[in-house]
Length: 640
Image 1: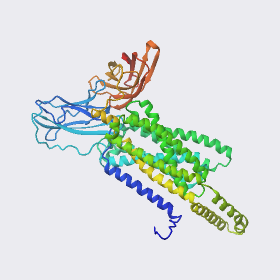
Image 2: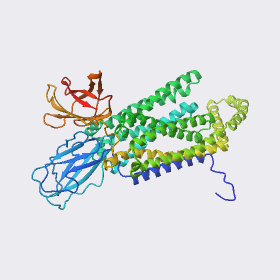
Image 3: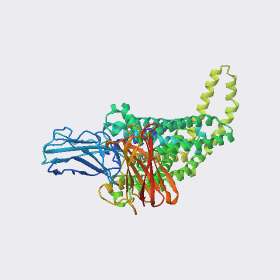
Image 4: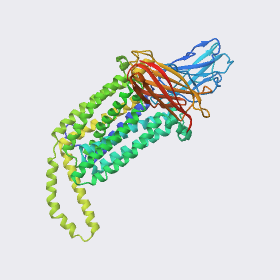
């Protein structure tokens, strides 16, 4: 820009394109930096020890290799592999055996007898309870270290090209959710006239399409993402079935079903609702759409809460609804911001009243974000050292800094909103009404060609819209608001990317605990872990086995419950149905039903199981091994 000549700015036609190009470039830059600089997603669980230990030299060959983890995990075939110096399997090539006791999560594999001396490689891979894959490798030696042809894997679980595509789909899913929910809320709450605006319709529909496509990609890639890392396995029907049996798979399928309901909501919003002219009928329909849309939006947000960080760790029963509120507030704020940006640049009809209503909605969203964010930060970080010394804590500091910048820019937007008026457009409308009503309609009605009359009417409407837009673009208050909202949207793009990274990064609290740092805030103040073993026999074929139950920390309040079922041969055993109930007969409490989720073959878990008071609790377990073979067994345990 010249220092001597005034700068008129870009033309009204070019400014929307420039804004869109700027945002697209910023999105590409942010995602590129994140994908290039960030490693594979860290997980909630971590390897805390092994026997033999990493780098250990033992005199004689061990009978088995065991690995201990900080949190519950799901394992399958080849989850733990032991390779001799030549690269051949030294283990018995069976599914790892669950050796967990109490609060200790441990798995092991048996080794062949008579193993020669040399260096052996242990490679492991599993799925953490919060849905993220984890992997690693280490070596130990028998007799003395030796050369080995086995190369330690450089790619962790969730990495490689499949991991990149899966992460992009994860980012796109959050972005689509924000546009779908925030755009719909903006139309219903702030600007009802936006239901007839084509740019607003495109924004919401594209949000729905993005979220649906990203969810389908994540569902198909879930098997290779947590396993082989090969794109071809995305169409493995057996692998897809195993994904559907897991908590993340169930969450993705539930999201797709809810998106079907969201499609019906969009059709009504931009169809029946947009065409309704009677104010009373439109008010009733607004209420119905708000209730129905709120239920669907809450359900979609819950699919994240039920399958990621909020569903594991301390106070999961509180964390999941808080996470839902947090996601809805993010969508209302950032999605509404995107809608306002589109409305200011692409439509000539939005007025100051709609902008002021969004300002109030944004303020309420920020209040909810602050409250839920403080709780989530305490739950996932837990200490100042974890805040500054872990990757999760550092990302959280960056997120808070971005929110501060966003609020500062929003303050300028509120100042422009306070100055905003519709007088210029109103005067333009008044000046256009008289000539249109006197001369132009006569010429149109006099034209004997109906097609030409319709063409002239379209041209006149386009000319009127262009004049309105030119008047609005010339309004300095509206131009200032557009610039500040564009700046808000730019910061929001970065903020959403950082927030997405937080969902796939190991929380600072668990990272410190795995490294031997601050004790967990969930450590029991009284009582201790409860371990039960209960044999059963349903009377049918393959109906005998043993149920093992762990309840930790084994005190009043929230507990984590794990159930393992072993068949008569000692191997993990799946059953069609498993139900539990807890009863405190001395106080007439219960039965309190518990329906655990399947984590892996023969392994189920339930988070946030509430024990209201200490006492001698009776634990009933119902096991069904076929359509007709079922048995209920019980055992008493002191809890609290």
